[in-house]
Image 1 (cartoon, helix red, strand yellow):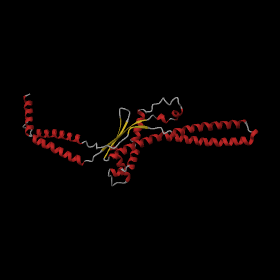
Image 2 (spheres, rainbow, N blue to C red):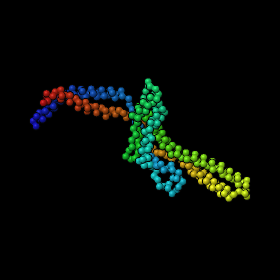
Image 3 (cartoon, rainbow, N blue to C red):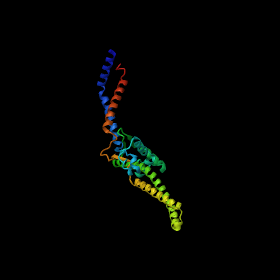
Image 4 (cartoon, helix red, strand yellow):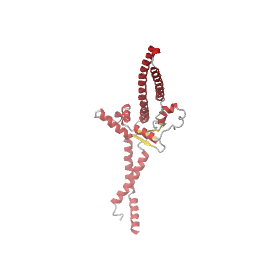
Length: 287
């Protein structure tokens, strides 16, 4: 216990006698940090928060059956949010952003073929963008760039591209089904016209089978035309893939670097480091 008391007293005495050197070291560190903060490019933050929409809203049965219209929630599940997150993380989304906002020039990438520069810009953009799922089943897309307007535009455009890609998935499925229905209707219509013309020509001599076949074709055409109309209604419905709870807006001031936080951290680290250097250099005096 006496040795520890003696060491503590020696250490305090050392700090009291060397406080000027220690203060100079801390101030010099803060000065270097301040110069570095002045040189480092300022980055502006922008973020958008979205939630997934229930994919059942795009189902044609939901549009036409009044009994089930109120059974589904407007918002989607965690799986629906995961699907939107997966689309947002696709390289095709980042490539489109790179091309639309000329991010190759923004990141000052030169000296390579365009394909290579584009890939480098995608990697840089991925470092600047953060996509996180919150505890409230929301998706937060945020970014830091050197331009406040650019930050907001990139985030909002990313949300829009993701929405369009998600909506195109079910729309393309309905459009293929509609195309198949239309082809089938055309084929059935031709058969019906042949059968009807035969009945008109033969009149009383037409067989009962011809009448049955004509009626059957007519019913099939009506049923498929009804189904095609329902598909067309679902396609034109424009059911949302997601809802934007918060649109990204340009930041009034830069977010990175945080000057106060960096200076406080630098001051504490330099103080601790300076004390350690003094103790090591004067270790014989503190024993």
